[in-house]
Length: 297
Image 1: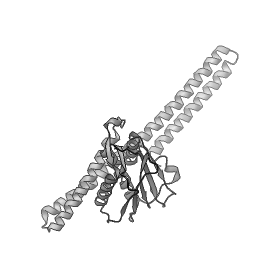
Image 2: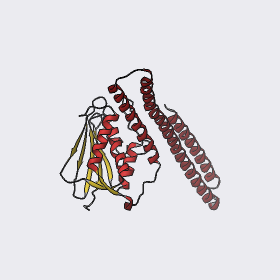
Image 3: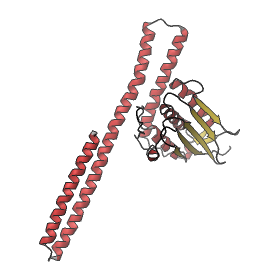
Image 4: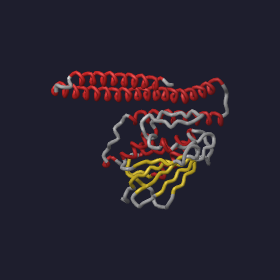
């Protein structure tokens, strides 16, 4: 039993004991004042207030315990996510300092360090954006070519995760520009987070398909499909919560629990939506972001 489960169990036991004591007192009061209407009614009303107070206090306390546990988990995950790329960059820098390397080796090391730097930058951006109110006026948006943006994100993800060229495929359907009104940086965060999740939950055999399509003349889909661990049906409605991470049996997946929360927040701020599909554990997952298509200028 975890520390949080023990704390919640203790709170529930205390609440039940308090309710039992309150019921006993109320029964005694009813027996004593059975023939006196006014004291009896006051006693019943006071009992109802006490019971409601105990229930509300217990609910709020349990929620606070869960929130504290989520924050602790988040801090632990962020700390780990920071240490990994920093340790990698330090190792490569020490190697460059102590050894004589060929130009090709140096270029390879520089590429890896840049990818680790991008990873750090993305994590910092996610943490900062998670605390920002995403309600923005459409007048502040500009035209964004989703095809070019998705291609850039695919290339960056392949470099960041050291993947072969065919690990992430991009399929742009149709011959018309897939343009939306929005903020390019936020939309880049959406696609990057979906790609990172797909790679992390794919295990060793990474096969990801990114599809851009227009299901209707007024909308654009960005769909990221993987063949990884999948998502249980009971988790599909929870995965977009802040700090929530899908439990994976027999494996540890890195992350902060902010990626999908940001995807939903940004999609909503752009007048769109996001939804997930999965046939169950071990059968992969598909995430689809639907955004309003920009009218031709």
